[in-house]
Image (cartoon, rainbow, N blue to C red):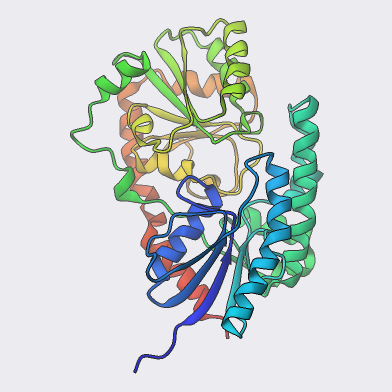
Length: 384
């Protein structure tokens, strides 16, 4: 007779492939559901095994983001209480992303909200009502993350940089922190030999001779530096240098199109909008660019090398752990002049970009899904 599986409850309101933190939790569940009995408490969950994994759906308002967080904080404990009453016992472990459920055993941190407010927030270019809303959102998440970190026995983070940052911000939690680098599906993001680069580019209004930089982000274009990339592109003399922007809501895209026109870039930037599958856009590009002011380990910075692209990025947590300057990409200061100089050099030799992309793909293989699941298995095995 097989021993009963240990029960784990997971909290994250969006456990789907398009959610940065949620997609990582999804990989943990997908890789370990044969060994543990998972119950997921979330608004959205792409259940890899509905017959073996339980899902308790928490209804949330569509927007704004702050209200979604607030509602989840209110409803999640109620649904957890119902789970407890139905099972007549507490689960072995409760895992929560960041502070989405503060009474957790493992807090899976993908941002340092208090540190961000204390440091990078001052340099944010966001203005008006959007700035007020984001400040409230970060303040709320800073409050909940502090509670979760205090209660948790273990705090899992994706990068050494975030581990150091949280240790400095919350010195009392230093011994709780374990680093598990983010994963990437190497095979899924590999460019197929049969992929028609020419046809995809034509659909986007690009030509084969263009040297295409790709910028990918769900949103928060200001923090991720799209304005700086547009200004740097305006300084480049190469007429074949183009920028492909993937992600963003229509209202944000319209705002950046105004900046595009102001800088005289009407024929050099393509806005593809939000895409559930970014792979064709990576495969149709020559270089991935990210000039963010703050990241803890952006998944797309692993996906792009897996797709065969070298990376130009500012000095970001996680990225600086695998990006070797001049080998698989370039580390650059977050200034227009520095970006212009590096991009001018990078885009001048399309053949070299392809060679560096091949190196980037080889180096990123250490972040494959199997290694990620194995590291999480080690974290769970280390707990009583």
